[in-house]
Image (cartoon, rainbow, N blue to C red):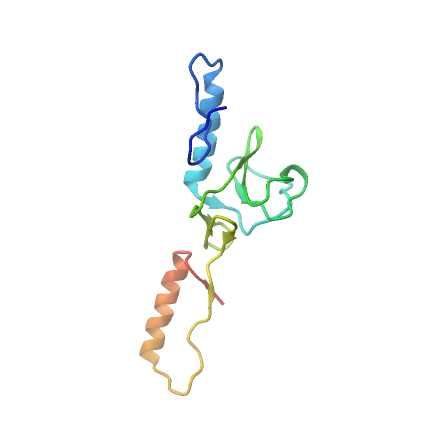
Length: 147
C-alpha cells in the first residue's frame, strides 16, 4: 500500500475500491499523532483495557500483540491496534506526568531530572526564588522533571 513519506499514512490510489477504509485509517492515525499524547513511560505489555485513541510507547521487549514492535507507538482503535514507527525528533506528551518525551532516532528520551536549589554556604533567597520559578516553568512545559 502506498504511504506518506513522513508518518506512513495510507494513501488512496486510483481505481481503489472502498476508498473510505483507507481514508478512515489515515484519519485515525492523524488523530492520534496530532494529539501528541501517550499514556506514560514505555511499556512492554499491552494494557488489558484501552479506550479508542489512547496511545502508548512500546518498550524494548514487547509482549503479546505488541511483539516485534519495539519502540513504536501503539494506538488503540475500534478496529484493534495500529502501530506507527516514530521519526527522529518526534515528540509526545505523557499523560502520566506531563513531560515531553522525544524520539532521538534510536530510542525515546525523557527530560532530565533536576533538583531544586538547596544547600550551599551562601544562600541568596532572591536567586533561589528565581531559579525555583524557572524550574517550575520548565516543568510545566514538560521539559524537565523535578525531584
